[in-house]
Length: 333
Image 1 (spheres, helix red, strand yellow):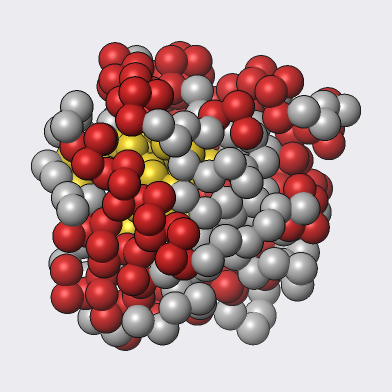
Image 2: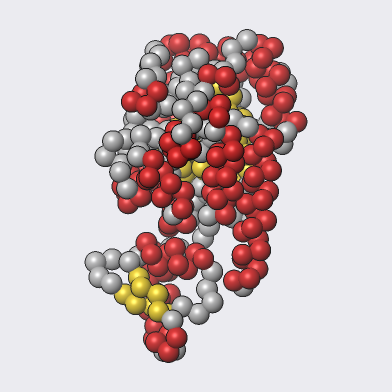
């Protein structure tokens, strides 16, 4: 905004504080908050930055966003290069058993990934060819669609892989590059008229919450200007993607600042390195409890979708996070 504004506080919701913080607004209390002129200034500032429309995204009839339950996105990992190798499935039976298990545990969306997106500087993850990624995805999709009608998402930065998956029944694209890897991705998503998850993946320079917000704003602008409808966009702050652990924790605590886009938020904290760094757990298999704690906090701070390796346990953490949020909202109202 370029200057500091002072506005009053009088029993507003937590979103009020989050919005004020992101606009560099100081909240006043007591007698200074009496004047109506402060309220006029407040609402003019917030309405300028935060339109009242909260966009709802729909995938195969499943609605995502404010006013709907937090959705669970289960990870179906086809990549043996993954940082959490215990979750990799490659054969027909193991793929179908995992899909049926996640569906039985209450998953809402299954996210299919065939090329590891884990930071190579942390895990030494090798890259695979697009041809290999495509082969893995197309081979698995036949097995998956034989046993479930759940909405499917493809986790890829390749428009060719995404297109093949969409043609085989997948309903959403999860692009962890934030539309910065494949220039054809925007055209594909627009022409197919499908939802897309856009991540703040700014890599090494992304060493602050502000950097993540700026990157995501750039990606969001690319999407909208390319003709992708706002009702098709889900945003991901990119926790665990090449950022220092302290930034990941700060992102988790400041998720509310991402409401400026008025889009649903997807958060993935499952088994990630920032949790291990705090708990001295190098093996991702040890990070379940930390992941569940981070999940409850993410839900309380505004996440609409939680991406997870552990559907049953995460379902419990999400319900607790929702219960806390519901009670806090009642008190503030």
